Each structure stands twice: as C-alpha cells, then as structure tokens.
Image (cartoon, rainbow, N blue to C red; front, side, top):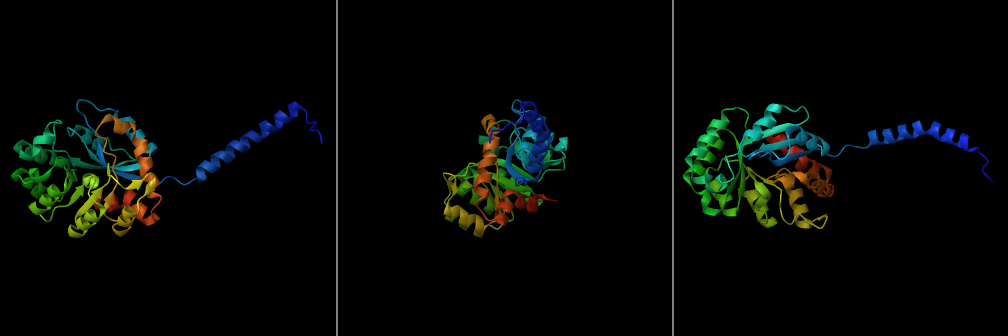
Length: 284
C-alpha cells in the first residue's frame, strides 16, 4: 500500500513525537546506574613550579571520573594544602605529608635532618593522615632519619606511603613493627606469591596498585591476581600516580582500566578495592 500521508502532516507527527523521544532518552539516562565510585590512593598535585591543571579543573576531572576521594600529596606540600583548604563538597581529601620540597629531595631525604623538621612542622596543620609518598631502595632505608620518620608516624598514628623495593619495605617494618604502610606500586613486579607472603607476615601492610605490572593479560585479569584479590580483598587500593603532566592527561584512561578489571571480580571484592578499604582505613 502506498503511503499517502502528506509531507506536512508527516513533519507534524515527527514534531509531536520529538518531546516524547527526548523525554524517553533522558529517562533512560537517569535510570542508568552510576559508575562505581573510586578512591584514588596515589594522587600528586605538584606545584613545582606550578600545577599542570588549576584547582577547579582538577575537581571537575574527579567529578567526571566519579573519583569521590583521594590520598593527596604534592611537592611541595602547597598543592595538598590547597586541596584540603578548598573543602570540595563532593570530594573526600585524605592529606599526606610529602617529605620533599623539590624533586632532588627524593635522592637525599633519608639522610637529611631538615626533612624531619619539614615533617614535624607540616604536621602542625592538624589534618594530616600520613607521610609519603617517599622513595627508598635497599639499605637506604636503614638510616636513623628514616627510623625517626617511622617512629614519628607510629607515635602520631599516621600511615606511611612507601615507594620501596622488597628490602626497603622489610627494613621499614624492622624499624618499628607497629608501622602501618601503604606499599606504593606493590613493588612494581614483586611476584604475587611474595606479595601474599608479605600480606600474611605484615597485617598492617596495604598494597597500592598504580603502575603495578602483571595484573592483567591484555584486558583480562590474570588468574594469579584474581586469586590474590579474592584472598585479601581488604588489603588493596587503587591509584593514579599523577607524578607528571601526562598522567593527568590520561587520567580518564587510567580510571577506565581499573573499572575494566574490577568488573571481573565479585562485586563485594571490587567495591572494597575501589573505595571501601580507603573508607575503613581513613575515616576518622
């Protein structure tokens, strides 16, 4: 049968239907579940010499990626203070003291008594939850100033965020067995079975996963890491490690990769790693 509806009438029908179509699309979007919130447990908002993104741009990026909390550090600590003092209503800021004034401090802080002065002075702001991220390799962790930092953290009930190899990690716990340590990058390439042994040996160790090698094979979670996450769901955290501008520029991709493999875990395990472990650790 030939359609004999006049073109003007056909246009009228389309115009009448358009509001309904728009409403249906909006309703579908409203009904779609929000992505799981994420807590970024390795965030640098460096101000050396100036931030790559202005504060409002950073906050907008977190909203876009549904990052609802951050472990905030910066070099120097001005960037962290800016995040805390902005008091963003939709972002939970957990501030850590970075023991660096400039990038060169990364190589010398463990033997520099002025760094301990920096830590103790910064602590007087009253809102810090930890110290780090700091870098240590091997026996560089075995100095009296590192031990003093560990003891200060234990005395003040602060976490330590350590970018450390296996030997340095063990030395940190030897300084004070009461230390609570977040292991940045989970050793980068420490075998999963050794990670499991550390988690058994040190109940106050948590593993942060930025730059961690071997979690996925292509886009699939490897069996070894899936078993590890399911065996120790309370002991892992996610992180972006925005140490250079390019990490800010690829922030959406970093968070998207986390969401991809979190979706391959049981929901209760995925939620713990995504944000609930951070809530349990840092809520005061």
